[in-house]
Each structure stands twice: as structure tokens, then as C-alpha cells.
Image 1 (cartoon, rainbow, N blue to C red):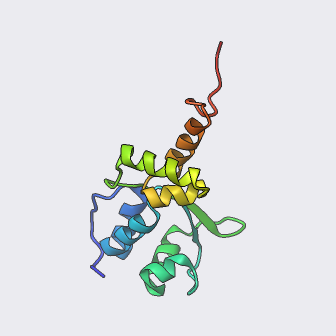
Image 2 (image 1 turned 180 degrees about the horizontal axis):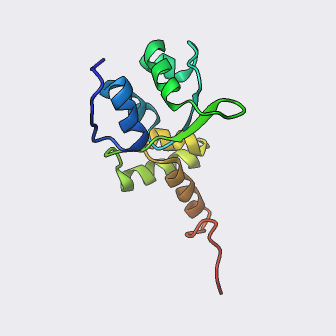
Length: 137
């Protein structure tokens, strides 16, 4: 794993991960979970997805950094996509996956897009281009 960087070009959550745990850890999270929500516990566990992905010690650094005082001690993070979005191809992939019965979150991960994008694709597949916006008139 590379040494933590002072500044990272990665956005938000991923930039913070790069600063505290290294760019390799941030890119591993981006590649695995970019565009979807993940849970970051207050303390790492050896069997948690983050520990399996970046190693227990690195996961523990990340968890401690993002620890919040909540009832369950879990922080929910939307992992940004950074520069890895391929809009048109991704929407097509999502529509095909959903048509095969794949759940929206999994379809988003497979396509490498935000979960919100996959929900919009699903709404459009139902013939509702505005999703849950409704009409004014």
C-alpha cells in the first residue's frame, strides 16, 4: 500500500481515505463500491467487507477516522464515482441487468455508477421519466 498523501484529487470521502490510509485503499473502495452506499462501522471487524478489501489495520484506521456517535455506531457513506463514470453504456447495462432481475444496488455496482442513477433508469423503464417528481399541473 502506498503511503498516505497530503492532498488527493479524489472527491469527498475517497479523498479523506487517501489522506489517512493511502491512495491504494481509496481506489480499492472506489473500484469495489463506487456509486453505492456503504456502511462504515465505528470499529473495524476482521469479517467486515472493508477489512477483507484493504486489510484489518487499514480498515481500522478508516473506521476510527469516520466514527460518529450514533446508536449503532455506523456511518452510511455514498461512495463517489470520481472519474469512472461511463453514462450511456452504464445506463444500458443497468437496464439489461434489471430486466434480468438483478436488484438495483447490484446493477449499479456492476455498471460502475451511482445507485441513484440505477433507480432513475428503473423509473424510466416503468415509463416515468421524472421518477417520483410528479406533475405540477
